[in-house]
Image 1 (cartoon, rainbow, N blue to C red):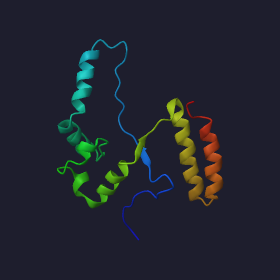
Image 2: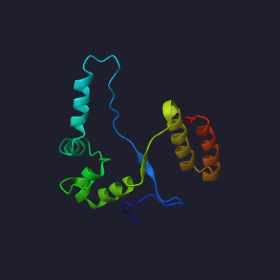
Image 3: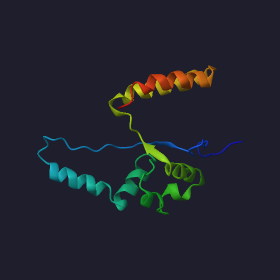
Length: 135
């Protein structure tokens, strides 16, 4: 059976990861006010929508932009599923150890794909990751 579907729901429902750009202004910047104005400008719906659609098919995390009918994510039946999943997406909150945590996750996926027992993989990976999470 082919198609695009929501992530399977557990006791707490469905979830996925919300990711995207990280904007920052350094403390020593000589153009902090201008940089802040630029960041605010990029988040306006009339800028953010086209920026996501034209920028490689990225999906918006803002509900008002996500519901705008002019964009592909509101028109394409397959992409609409991803937009629905975003309603339960959570931002990554792994702290400074994110690269190492991501490596553990990718290794777990590879181990599962090569036939190792999934429950065992998940238990050992969870232990490895737990030690890396922020307090």
